[in-house]
Image 1 (cartoon, rainbow, N blue to C red):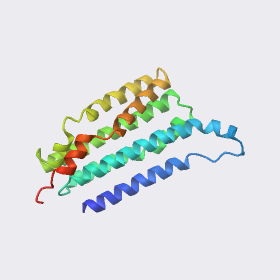
Image 2: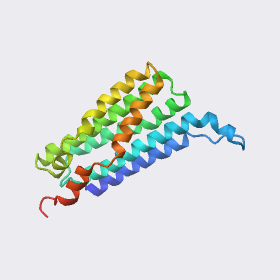
Image 3: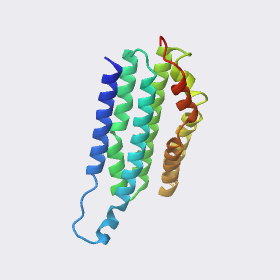
Image 4: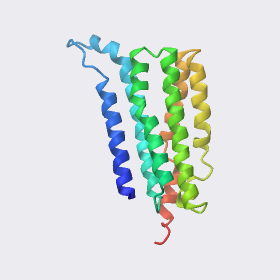
Length: 197
């Protein structure tokens, strides 16, 4: 198994996830703007999930780019991540079609949380295999976003049962945190040579 094959497989799964999500937005019957209003929750859910999948795609690409040699543990950890991400269309659709009701909002947050946990597991599996002096370990630095995100997801899950807006606030907040490029990561990966080069 090569890195290119792993990335191609992962990219394919993420592309299918995005395709499934957009197919959940049903074309309305009617030709005026008013028919779009009932679709607003579904469309907003789709946009948020698209951003999340895009963030994972981007960071996954950077992370796998640091790997010098794949291991069986990395392959399984990668599948674990893809499993949780593959549940995103279900959670997105359920949340949007039920007008951000508490249970769907909390379920959406749980899928986000477990995706973050799976990403962390893959990250740590790579660092364990490559060693503490690996490019990924150096690039991560303090990784404050990785540490605070699960806490914000948990606040969003709990807050969803109080008011849907609370859950939505925390889910959007985490997405915004990750949309801002990590300059330390980009700088380290750009300037640190791969081992053996």
